[in-house]
Amino acid sequence: MKFFVDTVNLEEIKLSNALGVLSGVTTNPTLVAKEGVSFHDRLREIAEEVSGSVSAEVVSHQADEMVEEGKELAKIASNITVKVPMTLEGLKAVKVLSELNIKTNVTLIFNVNQALLAARAGATYVSPFIGRLDDIGHSGMDLIGNIAETFDRHKIQTKIIAASIRHPLHITEAAQQGAHIATVPFDVLRKLVEHPLTDAGIQRFLADWNSRI
Ligand code: E4P
Image 1 (spheres, rainbow, N blue to C red):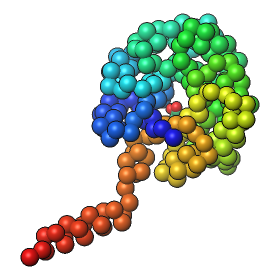
Image 2 (cartoon, helix red, strand yellow; image 1 turned 120 degrees about the vertical axis):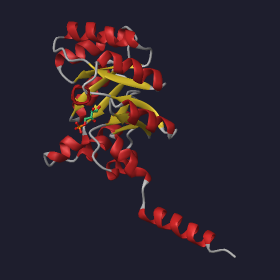
Image 3 (cartoon, rainbow, N blue to C red; image 1 turned 180 degrees about the vertical axis):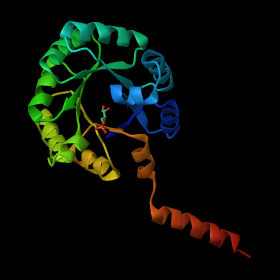
Image 4 (cartoon, rainbow, N blue to C red; image 1 turned 90 degrees about the horizontal axis):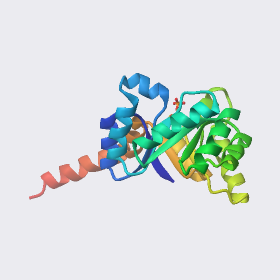
């Protein structure tokens, strides 16, 4: 399983990239609004920093408008992936964009049928939202496993991005369930590195080293 970071904060993206583990970035309208930046300018900066896929979400609702928005986003850089919501209009847009060889990420996936339809429409990626399913008492992780099994059985090439990640256990389990990618908030990425026994081990090695004769 590969790692994307789920943020529009450039410092977080640079720090993640410096770790050598970053394969891409996902953004969404909420993250852009929180950061208070010009969307296109920031996408340009992110796409220069990261060589992998950078997902940029459309905000229109009609397929033809999504396609136009997607074409404009795709012009920003060659590694832009157009993120499209899982709706009838979204599927129509994915069909057209994929025929234009523009990569797509179908977002807000909450069941296997939605994932299957998105894949058949030509999506490069599907993004099932684990945390938001857990929030309403459903198993986000079961969904990852079920989509992975279905795609595997039908030899579907569309990649599964485990999204709406809330804590480190989501990462371990998404990898075990067959997600190709997890898109991770930066604070969760940091937590993946940490373990109290690692810290204690470093302290003990240092104390022993300093006490040598
Ligand atoms: C994925 O592409 C989304 O940007 C993101 O993972 C949504 O996460 P949230 O449910 O924490 O908002």
